[in-house]
Every structure is written in C-alpha cells, then in structure tokens.
Amino acid sequence: MARVRQPERMEEISSWLREGRITPADALQMAIELRRRRVMPRPQPRPAETEHDQQRRVQAVIAELERMVGLGQVKALVRELQAYIAIQLRRAKAGLASEPGSLHMIFTGNPGTGKTTVARLLGRLFKEMGVLPKGHTVEVERADLVGEYIGHTAQRTRDVVRRALGGLLLVDEAYALARGGEKDFGKEAIDHLVRAMEEHRGELVVIFAGYPDEMAWFLRQNPGLRSRIALTLHFPDYTAEELIAIAEQMLEQRDYRLTPDGKAALRQILYGNPWLTAGENGNARAVRNLVERAIRRQALRLVDRSDASRAELMAITRADLESAVAAMAGVGP
Image 1 (cartoon, one colour):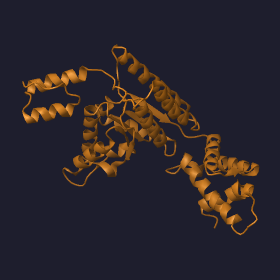
Image 2: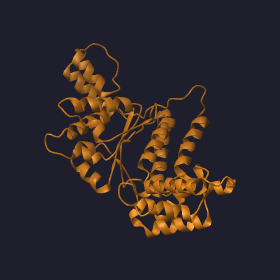
Image 3: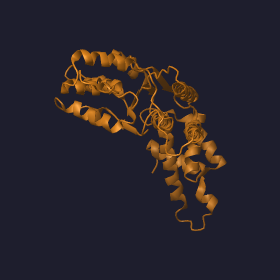
Image 4: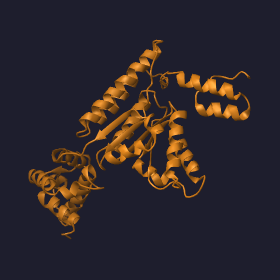
C-alpha cells in the first residue's frame, strides 16, 4: 500500500479506494481504526483569543437560551450537554481519553414551541465551543430533499449536506420522509442523511424535528438512524401564563407595552380561546400573530390622532387585543 495519511472521514477512504491508492483490505482496516478513534474535535481558537474570551461567548449563548420563556427541561439538557463537551475537550487537552458521543438529536413538540430557535442557538453554541467550525443552521423539509426522478433525491440531499457542513442541519417534519410507498424517494433521502451523519462527524450535526408520535414512528422505520441519535429533546406546549410572558417579550422588543387592562384582556383571551393556540399556528406562533394584529389595530386607533403621546404610541390596550382576536376569528372587520 502506498503511504497515505490517516483519514479523517469515511468518504476519504472511499475516494482512496476508488483511486486505487489502497486495497479493499486496507480500506476495511482504516474504517475500523477511524471508528475506533474517539477524539473530540479540537477547539478552533480565533486569533489572539483567550480561554476567557471563548467562555464569555459560550455564556452569552447560554444566557440567550435562558431568556427564552419556559422550556425548563430543554434548558437543563442543553446545560448538561455544554458541560459534557467542555469536560471532554479539557480531557483531550490533558492527554486523557475523551468520548465525543453523538450530537445528532431528535426534537419533538408541536409547532411554535421553540424548536427552531433552540436549534439555531445550539449551532452557535457548538461553534463557540469549537465543536463546529461555522455554527450556521440550514433548515429544510421534505420538499428540499426529495426529488422527482431517479438520482434527483441523491443530488438534492448532497447539496443540502454540503451547505450544512460546518454547522447544523435541521430537518423539520422529518417523519414526512418515511411516508409513501416502496417507490417513494423519501427513504432514499433518509439513507443519504444517515450516511452523512457518519461520514461527517465533527463537521455536521443533524436534528430531526416534528410531532412526538410521528417522530417515534419515524425512528422505528430506520434502525440505522435510531442508532446514531442519542439525544431527544421534548418541547412541551406553553401554558397560558408562559404565552403571556412571550407576548410581553415580543411587544417589548418592538417598543410596545401592555396596559393593565390590556394584560388582563390578554389573559382572558388566552384562557378563553383554546382554538387560538392550537394547530399548525399554535403556541408562540399564535401569540406572534395576535401581537402583530393588535399592533395594527392600535395603529388604526391612533392614526388620526396627531396629538398622541409617546406613552400612547407604545400602549396596547384591551380594545386593540379584542379587536385583533375578533378579526382573527373572522367575526370582525
């Protein structure tokens, strides 16, 4: 065998085998050794960076996560994961055996429960810790992966993986990939993703997201996928009080405030209209829609008042919210 360096990825072994640089027996041994090596990715420090600088950026991402309303168990698991990675990196630096584990995950929960936001934060966290070189998040669904003819799905999936390398790939409504008959190309996309998860360890984290029951079914359809995912984060529906807090955050970010009667009205609306926070546009999505509609209703209320004060321009009242809900329910103008 010609002398070659140690491979970093399975695809390098495949390439060398095709080029005739190694024999099939060499390729098998290299694959075994590559799987056996259990070394965490080395942190990739910025120029003149100190450990304190890196830790400060990591804590800034964690603080952003902590500011999210609710999600107590999700936050606890992310803190645990962050501590685990930090210790494994320190062990590797000290010359001790380190176990990278699998960072690929399943996110379960209804729409609007914070899955996409947390995925983006994880991408940034992994970058700041040196686990991923870029930390960007590529968000896709079935239509972005599955093609219409033979060979199309493979190309689409490879293109998506290529865009996501160095960061995090979020596959929303992932269970849709496993639906369809024997000739459906969705299962081909899953197979390509499973291969990418193995071949690009250290440069790609994949998160599959969707409804809890559907995701449990999805994992049962592909044992190879299930064996590569060790982490599952469940995102529960928000309570009415949490949705009120989310609404206040959204308004504050836009320089608006709920008046006391506005907050009381919001509480009555959220407790008294379960349809508002159910379905595809439920949870935080419903609150966002309500907040945006209420802001427009406030604009209608004030547009002809040239003397409106700064406080009035910021205030969202009971009338604004009730008018917004009526419009959303289709019973108002």
